[in-house]
Amino acid sequence: MQQLTYLAVLLACLVLTAPLEFVIGARVYRQGRRAALAILPVATVFVLWDYLATHAGWWWFDEQYLTGVFIGALPWEELMFFLVVPICGLLTFEAVRRLRPRWADAAAKDLEAKR
Amino acid sequence: MIGAYTAAALVAIAAAVLMDLAVLRTRLLRTRLFWASYAIVVFFQLIVNGILTGLGIVQYDPDVILGIRLVYAPIEDLGFGFGLVTLTLVMWTWLGRRAATEPVDQERTAS
Image 1 (tube, one colour):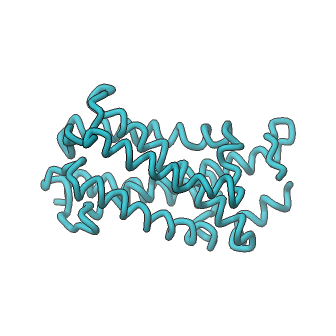
Image 2 (cartoon, chains in turn yellow, cyan):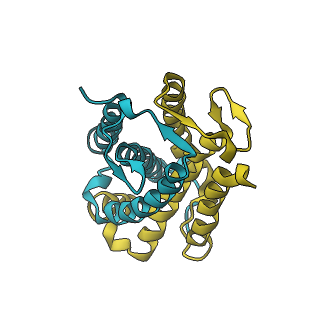
Image 3 (cartoon, one colour):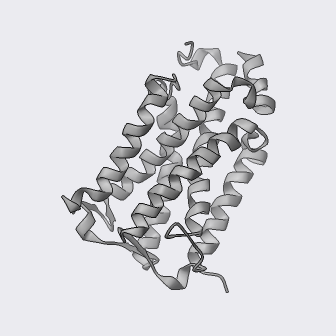
C-alpha cells in the first residue's frame, strides 16, 4: 500500500478538483485540445529540467512510496505530477473566473470584447 | 554562491513573468483573477509539497537549496510551482485569445 502513496496524492488532487469542472463549470476538461496545448509544452520543459536535476543529484525519490515504474531517471508518478498540477491550476483559474467574472479585468476584458 | 535549485527557481519565476508581460502579453499578473487563483493554488501546493517532502518521497541535496523550508518543502519549490502553473495559465489564456481572434480555428467554448 505504501508504494501507492505518491500516486494517491496525485489522484486526490484530481478527485478534489473535479467539482470545479463538473459543479462550478470550469470547462477545462471540455476544452481538452486547448488544455493539452497549454499544458504539454510547459510540462515538457519542466520534465526535462526535473530529469537533468534528478540526474545531477539535486533531488531523489524514496522508492518505498513509488509503484516502481520508472521512465529514465524519473518515476512515472513524477511525470504525472507535471500534468496533474497544471490541470488543477487551470481548473482553479477557470472556476474563479466563473464565480468572479469581473476579476478578469484588464487582460481578459480585452478578450471578451473580441468574442 | 546560491544553490543550483535556488537559481533555477528564480529563472522559472522570471520566465513566467516575461512570458506573461512581454512575450505573449497575456498580462495575467495584472489581474485579480490570477492572484486570487494563485492564492488558492499555493495553499494546496503547500499541502501537496508538504506531504511529498514531509514523508521523504522526494529528498533534496542540501547543497542546491537555501535551506529555508515552508511546511517541510524547500522554499525553492514555490518558485518552481509558480513557474509551472503561471506558464500554463499564460499559454491557456494565449490560446483562448488566438481562438477568439481567429474564428476558423475556434473551439466550441460557448456554455
